[in-house]
Each structure stands twice: as structure tokens, then as C-alpha cells.
Image (cartoon, rainbow, N blue to C red; front, side, top):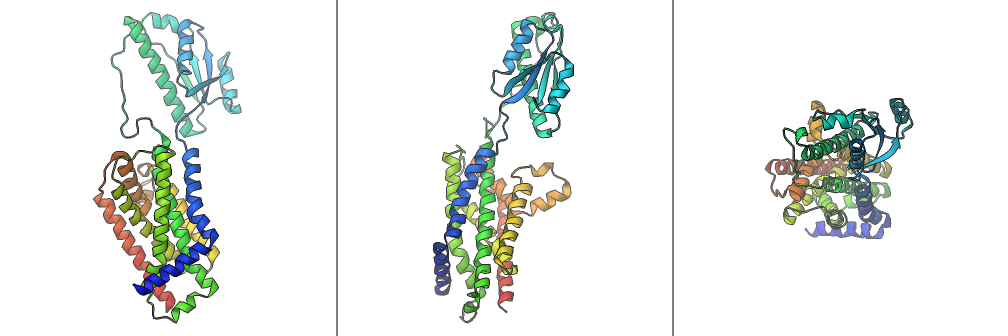
Length: 367
């Protein structure tokens, strides 16, 4: 332990005397959480919609008024005929169009179902689906209001959905836990890959060869300061998410801290493996960013659900530590479930394998 403490103290001095490493370790996580948490918003706001009212009745005007009352939809154009819809889509003036046919009020007054057409620009599939859902919800809500006012136009049943764990459907509650995994994996891998590669370039690694210290002691001594630094980063990210974005914490902080520590060890193991293979600082940094940021963002379930991916790609997703860590994070913070046996076994196995490979690679490097 005396040798390990000496290596850890030496590495801590390197960190404190290098303002660039401190900036990467402290400022980058804060900036990423604030930026991504504010920018990545999966909610729909101010959806531009055009209206083609061919009925010009009180019922049609009430439907248009109800459409814009929720704040999600904004009427940006009033069309005169159906031929103006396609040019408006092509010019990007609006994303959807609501068409109210002639005789809409008479049909409703007669107790018969009236048809309202919703036209959506499908060039952006995700936005098109959201726009169609919002407009259908508005039309159905107005239909229920008319059914309540007119007994002849009653509906056979109504649907009252209820969302658990995130009733307001706020994107930050989904994004911030993912940012914890993304930032920890990227920052830890970059810092540890730089730690050993920098000593290779400066020649100080050869000085360690003249000492009786073992490779495992070098690895543990270099990892300890970065575990503490990553723990500080995790605390800052979770604090920003809790107080800046109002992300709930329904589970145990102790369970969350334990899983974060386990994931930090995995991320540091990835960085150590990269540093053992890389011969220059630039190659190590590029490899760390490529191996951590893109897979964690695209394949872990951070942005896209794993279940919607092709089966061969899902197998690759299950091999990523961030995939299982995200399940645990969102489960603890949103659902209040503190124990995940399967994910825990997978993460522990990955931590042991990665650290073992890192120590073995470093030993071969010394030889």
C-alpha cells in the first residue's frame, strides 16, 4: 500500500499541476450537462400549423380556437384552398395542416360523425408522428366537448391516460440520467488514457521500471485519484440535474452512489486499456472519444430505445456497460427500485474483466 500511495500522490500532483486536465475533469461535465440538458428536448413546443376552414361556422371556429389553447400548436397560416397545402410544406411555412370540410357544423348538429382531415409533413418522421398525435388529441378533445353539450352526439367510451414516474413527460427526467453515463464514461476514459500515454511520451514511465513496484500497483495507484475525481464529477452532474432540471430522486442515494462507483471503475478500465495500446497522446485521446462517446450516445439507449434496433445491433448494445448502467440509473431515480441483480452481475463482470485486461496489457508493456 505504501507504493500504491506513492503512485497515487504522484498522479494527484500531476492532475493539480495541469490546468488542462482539471478543466477537462471539472468544467467539461458541468458544461455538457447544462448544455445537453437544456438543448435536448423531446417535447413539442410551438408546432406551426395551417388551417383550412371551409365551413366558417361557430363549431369550426371553436375547433381552431381549442387547437391553439394548449400552447403546443400555433396557427401560422390561414389557407383559402387545398392547393396551398403542398407549397406551404415545400417552403417550410408549417409542419401540419388542419382541414375542416364544408357542412362540418350541420353534420355535428345532426348527431352524425364529422370528419376532420389532418395533413402532416412527413419529411421528418419523428416530428410528423408527434404533430399527428397532438392534432388528433385536440380533435378528440373537442369531440368529447361537443358530445357532452349535445346528447345526440354521445361517444361510446372515452380514454383517460395516466403516466407514471414522469407525469409531465419532461425530457430532462429522461436525458439527465443518460448524461451521467455519457459524461462519466467519456471523461474517465479520456483522463486515464492520457495519464499513462503522457508518461510514455515524456519518458517518465521508464523511471518506474527501475523501481521494485509491480504493474498492478502502478495501475491501482494511477486509478485511485481519478476515482475520486470522477466521484466529484458524478456528484456535480446529479446535483445539477436535481436542482437545475428538477429531476426526481425516488430511490436510495447510497444505491446510486454504489452503482456510480462501479461504473467509474469500468470507465477507468476502458481508459487504461486504450493507454496500454496507444503510442501517442493524440491517438489515445481520439481513441477514447471514439470508443466512449459515440457508442454510449447511440447504442446504449440514451437517445434511442434498444428494443427498436435490429436484433444483431441489440446484441452489440447489450455488451456496452452504459446500456445496463442506464437501466439502473433511471430505475433508481425515476422508479425508486434500488436493486438490479442481473445488471449488477453484468457490471461487476465487466469491471473485473476490463481491469484484468488492463493489468495484463500493462505487464506485457513493461516486459
